Amino acid sequence: MPTNNNDEMGRRSYLKFAGSAAATVGLAGCASDDSGGGEGTTEPPMDGTETDTPEETEELPEPETREEHLQRANLLLHRRAPWIFLNRQYSIYGKATRIDWEARRDERIQASAISPTDGDPSATITQSSMDSGLDPHDHRETPTDNIITQAYDGTLARDAQGRIIDELATDYTRVSEGEIKFEIRGDVQFHNGDGLTVSDVAYSINRIVDEDVGGLTSPQSDQLAGVTGAEVKDGAVHVYSDGINPVVFNLFASYCDVVEEDWIENNDSNYINSHVNGTGPFQLANYEQDVEVAFERNDDYWGDAPDLEELTIRAAAEASTRVSQLLAGETDLIVNVPPQEISRIRDEDSTEIAAVASTRVIFNAMRYDVEPFDSVEFRQAMNYAIDLDSIIENVLQGFADATGQPTLEGYVGYNEDVDPYPQDQAEAESLVEASGYAGAEITLHTPVGRYLRDVEIAQAVASQIDELSNVSCEVKQRDFASLAGEVTTGNIEDKPHFYLLGWGNTTFDASQTIIPLLTSDGALTSYKEDEQVDSLVNEAQNLPGEE
Image (cartoon, rainbow, N blue to C red; front, side, top):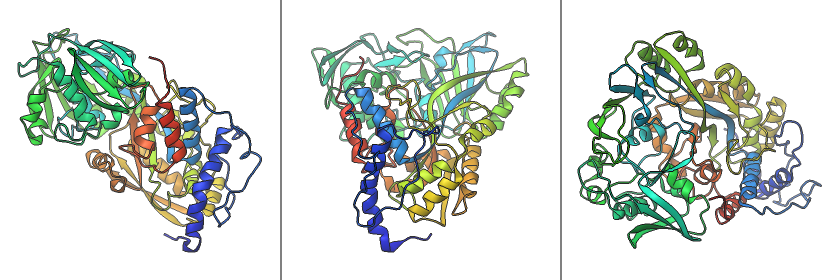
């Protein structure tokens, strides 16, 4: 891959400053062409100095509210293009008519909400992949979560529409700026017969946010962003945060399964990852790693007993296989039905489609610290190379919404003034030349079958990039567990340089996408050392929001 070593230091110095200038233009709202995308970048001076333009010198109003800080962060990220922004995923499920079940926006499949209509009290769910282990605090992917959620409860939860509801906590209040309190149910048993204690709840929180607790460094620490720890005081669980933590109740409504302290401390990692001891409506009956997980109804459940007596969760990576299994009556609920298969399912009397706009954004991450993606011009070029409307229409057949920022519409912090990048191949080629990386050869890593038409999306992206005269791109198909393992190590060096990923944010708040994926300390970040983004998000997290 050709590089321009002579001006490398000048270019790197420029990017530190040009990022600020480009952000200023974007945050001022001066990207006012109909597209909403970034303009081309002029050749920078090689001495690291900034050049002023009328747009760059305009005074900007300072953001005042928490939401304004997040909106500005979204504008900035649109301009710096750490991702190729793709689409909001629709969750398209196929289900047997023998069950009643409502699709949720957060992609969670809670079997307690399944009601058989034919008298058979069992059901089978087929996902795109199996779990990465059964430790509820040691994973970051939805397929694992959909298995674990059957057996573990949290302090709070959400209903199918995303509203916060009580779970193990019967009351929750803010005590002071950095402290909240949970009152915990007293009539709850773990599956092994031990009673739930307030100490178990505090331990569960600490196991996620404190790497010295519970024998692991949890990859979920950012899911409880701002939380520093928990303790038992006056019979309740007191949770402490670094600052006001305006979304703390939203976090606990989506994350933090509660485990039994003694059970975790008395068993090793292998045992915890192959056994289950929660307080949820189903308890583990049989576990065959990478094959299936079988549950049975927990007859001692503290809440309403589920209608199902038996539940089996399996996986098939190929969407066509899942559809065939549904049509053959081998499973009752399948995920990620391809648009071209919808009519097959609808045409059968025994099957039907359930679809809903999800909380998941699909994107191509570009590691900021490796060539050629260390250039903002090159990253912008990759966005301009993509015909997003064509991908949504032809690959996803309309089951998607185009995006131009990390935050989805309807979330706190979404910036309605930011539009998706339009396709402009001439602009893309010009920006590639300005980046110094003409002739770059790049590889897009994609999971197979994890997201709706993930391989087909990746192939379309690579093909459109490959149409540029000065960049070539190919696709590398990956097993999702392998790719997720690289992405979730906490070390940016372990990640592929360029990869397709989906991120589900069930808190309905911009911070919980930006913090883990696009800030310097994010557990899954591919983008660091952007002081403006870090500062905006940090300030947002220290301002009050809606309780």
